[in-house]
Image (tube, rainbow, N blue to C red; front, side, top):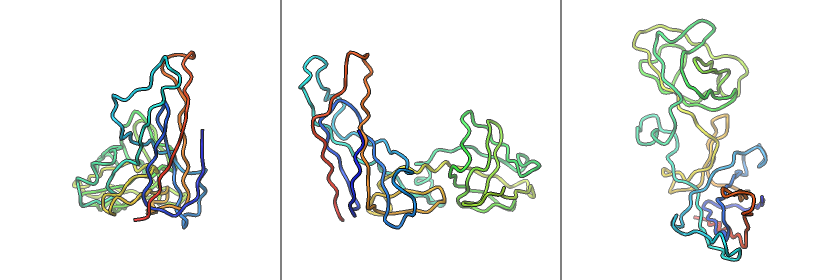
Length: 227
């Protein structure tokens, strides 16, 4: 079940009488993309995990409250902030090969166009700290492109001190701890939007106990607040 709502707010909270978790995606009024192109964000359940609807009484609806997860926005100077982002991989000077290929091993390669943030030490290899898109990737190496570019970023091995870390930056919504918990998100170009005009809600109607248990929803409420 998906619901689209137009509003101009900064904080949102969901209350659902159901058996299943919920997801959301948001769109800022200045963002030129459409809500359909945004990434679904799994919501955090605020209701205690011990609250469970009866598998026998089909009318035993429980009220579950969900919220957008908290996270810091990107800050290369803060290890605390960067701990909120997954490290895709690290590389050293010796890991830079021909055709601007960087040797980074990851069993789950990112897709072309995915957003990453690079933080380097003694950077002298053609790439500076900042956002990049994945140009190509496999389990052992990647190529980068500048955000919005369709060409490979030039990477040269110059100093043995060159090391770098790539962080994966998803386009999911989060409450930015740097911005008084205002709901924010990144686009694939690295643009950082605060607040939103439109949001969508999706309730995942799935069952982990067989096809004889059909999820049901009684009431869904969304509370949007201007702060």
